[in-house]
Length: 294
Image (tube, rainbow, N blue to C red; front, side, top):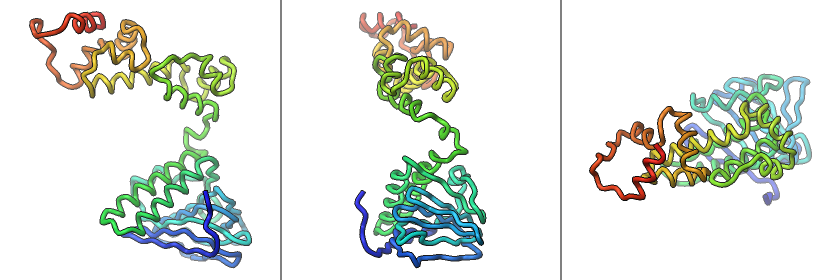
């Protein structure tokens, strides 16, 4: 992403929110011994910053986020010739607390090394500033939405969050499965895609996800089938095909194993539809499809 040059200060403010984008020189420093009554999130973009607590200093290189909670002492500033950062002050909100349990730093601050998530956090914060700077009457709601996305992306880099422990190759395998759910999926094809042997992928996948790859694939396919059965009128045979089952009878057996009823029975049970009476109009093909799958 192109960086603006020179000393810039962009501020935005809406009810309960303040945010901005700074490029500061080596003299930049902020101290608030008593902190503030809200939360402060800072994302280091370029150059370098620092967090200070007494004699203890923590560097804030690009891709680092620091979070100050209410009343936590603020002491931060440039740690190099210049420091580009984005920041936002935001009020406490119960909906956000789940995303704020970061590793601690001296003085009660919280710090994350964002890695691959840094770009997404930056994009969300830029959107936050744009909404706060704009004239829209509902800009606070959009700003909150952007802030929440920034914090969720931060959480993906949080070592205390469960998904953080996933091997990148397992993450790639999960993405491959999601993309190919309606097609053919085999251990060999997924392993080739992520650069592992089938046996190594099988071990990593089970250790990380808690279930085997075939178990996970079937779970995802049945979940998608549930959505199609609930939200559409597609025949069961077509639902089976759309979620990757070439044999509709096999799909019906696997579905029954999970729910204790056939796909057709489940469809009627979850949405309260009345089943067709025996003498209601039904094409021969449709009759064959449904009777074969129940």
